[in-house]
Image (cartoon, rainbow, N blue to C red; front, side, top):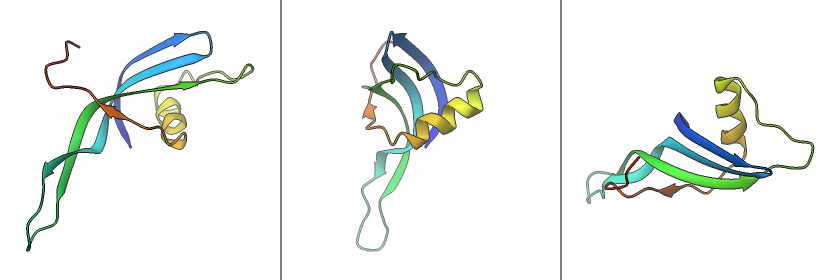
Length: 82
């Protein structure tokens, strides 16, 4: 689930999103007694819009729209220059 949208780049039908996504990175690998723990990370993902499709302009609706796409998020390196 998206926590915060940092940036959206749209080039005609191609959209690239940079966002903080919860439970995207392993914080603690777990042990015999404790399960693994996951935290939020800055991630990026891309997708294509249909010809007659537009992104929602309202941020809350945009987050819902993107979460419903079930995107494959790639964790950005910690040293990435935002």
